[in-house]
Image 1: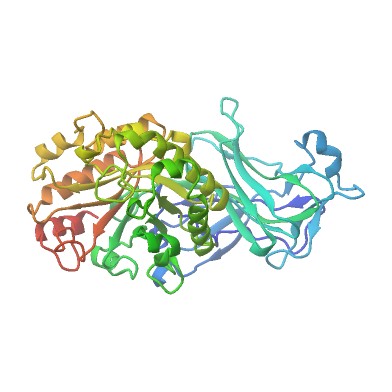
Image 2: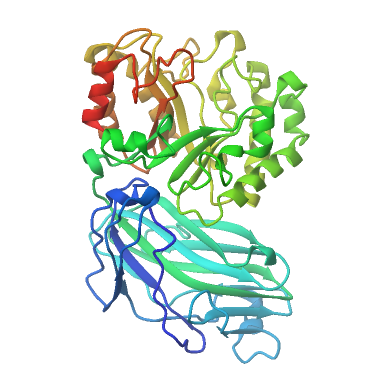
Length: 523
């Protein structure tokens, strides 16, 4: 995981029209790994060392020293401004790009000021080259507006001749009330070997405002293994997740957790992520199920498709954005999870699939406007209720409206107790031919260019005690871990004692000791 404290050491003074670009090559897993289980970080092979730091990780766990290298100073140039180029000269009468004294730290920041409408762009002149390397990359910056609300984009470009540009981009709406706000893009973005990367911070339509930019950094994460040899984010929901006791029991902290704020009242408040509640201080990745519509209150997908609940959803997303400000972990939002099951009031029938897709797209637009740093997760259940008459693939809103395809998958119906049974279950489809098994879901994600996740999983103790399922599942995860299309990005064990009779729990108490022991050994 890339933490917000991995920033650039800036000089005490800043030359006119310059900014410092900090590049760190971190020996971290290809998943959103825990700070407590990072391998020691390795710096780029050139440039003087500018410092080391050791800071406490989440829940008090120590983290390895962070070794950072500073590359050559980057120049802010007046380029790529189109017709507005003349508005962005350093000597402009009204419009300037200049160093500002009010930086985040001891040094100054860069200030972009305009009295006329134009596009301001900060683009370091140097490039980060990764000869013969593959991995993942992220760009971060801190921005602050001193005037009206401003749209700010941060993007990563690959300057390799055969690559398309930009490689990744994300936009934010920055207001004066935000103060300094951290913006980022590219987490989980896989790189090809020999990439040549650059980043830019763009403020389109900046008018009558000053935008401050500070601590611009481009970082790569080299692939390596986590505790237990994992190369994906492994997490837990329920007992022992938030307080770290489950991680201590298995010998490796959870890199991601899962929670639910999905009934009508909880959706409005999003309690579990607020300060003083279960995940109020959580710093790792978090998968939060927020519910959808509420047919028991008269909601319909047809009305949702027409925008009837936009204001409600906007408030939910605003609450999440406010609660997640400056946390280093990624927020995964599961909207209308298990929509293909008859047990939730946001269930989708075959006749509602088109309305669901349109409603989802509306929600996606709100999410990108309000909390763009989050990832939107589409998460069907592995079991589609026949009564709905739904092929859940018909409800897929399109890959451009989804960041991660996930599934809630439990070892039940049928129960897997041998390696052969597990292999048979992988490719299962339902009566309409839609994915039902783990592998068939993963291939659907791959075909649509999306990473894959398992937001809820466990084995049902009321049907047996299967260490074989744990072992085979672990092997399957190892084979398919990754952040690209079809790669397993994360999995979250459902360890909730209060559900049913605790049939899915494996710690601290369990009804399936063999499966529990196998999990503890393997994870």
